[in-house]
Length: 142
Image 1 (spheres, helix red, strand yellow):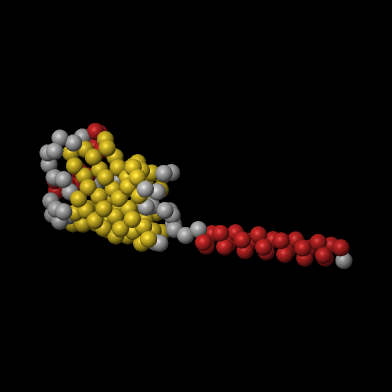
Image 2 (cartoon, one colour; image 1 turned 180 degrees about the vertical axis):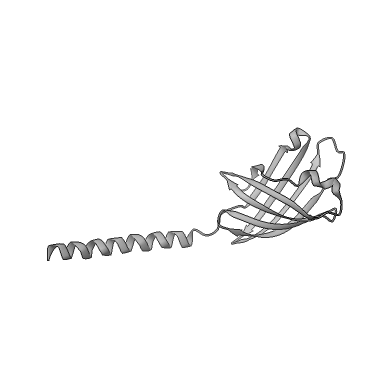
């Protein structure tokens, strides 16, 4: 009898812990990508790349701009939209030169890692700015 009461008590406590864990996981929601990010020494110090993310639930709106520090060449700016899936977000973008592409964003502590790929190239002068594994530091808004 004593072991049956112990077993029922143990099962009840285990069920409560399991339900609390599931509830915490379900209410945690998507990862938080919201903020302003930049690499001020982009392209080995030759340029600047700025990236902003506005998140609402699982939906993202992104924007970015890039330029060479000395002012030469193309200076694309772009907008796009995407979705959060766990700790990664996927997005599409179109820049001011008519280039379009896809990308991913991953969290890296307080910063992000962005990978971009051009899908349609209208102006190849912008391609130097669209790279894989660009680590961007948070510059504002958490």
